[in-house]
Length: 408
Image (cartoon, rainbow, N blue to C red; front, side, top):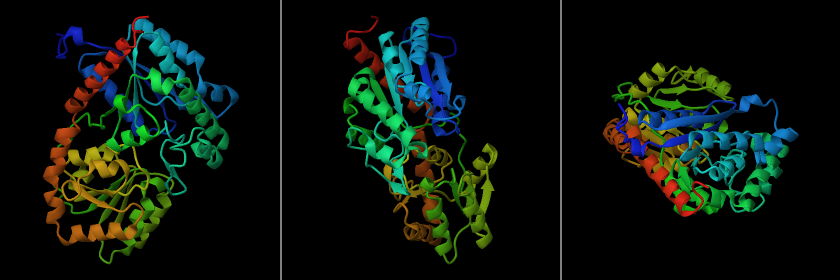
């Protein structure tokens, strides 16, 4: 056994984990770091291979555009790392725009099995969100060219940038990279997996592995009796739905909002209109922890599908139920009447109805705290996540061997 790890030397994997960091740090960046730490804590040899989107000043220049489709220097660098480390697995998170899908092709040719995480919908939607003009958009889901994304300038609000991402996806669909060179996919939710199967990803190679918390924060008691929102203050997060619902309530409970973003002024206006809306701004981890533990419930009013909101896991870990849109991954993660409640996405009146019901009978959200905590312990701990990850890696290795190319 490896000292202090509980992993037999014969089971110790050599893993290269690849990720292109976003310009604005987000949940996918944290998931990448959490998974690297988790693998290392179990004794595996893990080598991060990363690029930073901040390294480019604009997109797309000709060189960046070409690199998003087939980045030869990065592919060569990664192949060299795979050979040097004698990697068993190369696990990709975000590959856009500086790594490209040339990297899994090169890594597989160098002898590794390839795993791709699906934290968003990029393989079917160049923007990655299925969200446009304030609502869900699936125009690209069943197209071969992804032309609607170019027409609407979905990626970075730019037709040229959208054309580059669309061209990369179409090129690698045509070449067979997506169908043939990736040995296993890891979707953050059942809903994500289902949508991407519709986009022709191989169903028999998609595993569902939700996000997890690396540290158990402990249980709260909801003693504050208020509602909480935690997230980016942006249109897709349903901030307008949230504020309108609170305006419509004759006697609303206190709502505490933590986060920053382009709709911050709307939130500040709401605090001026009502003493029952409190804005925490960018809150420290300690403030988030205390606020969430004392909240009666968390509100997640997103009007997009989401990949798998980590705020759900954070709330459940503290025993805090979640009131969420009946949409996408949120519909799967929350059991209505057990670990939270649903309302119609983008419908302030329906959210207000749910809030009124919970306010009228505080025993309802209080009774959900135990099941919410149980859901965390059953589904979202590091131990549970690690077990699924090992299943994914073993399946990827087996497919790599069966292909007859391993070690060539």
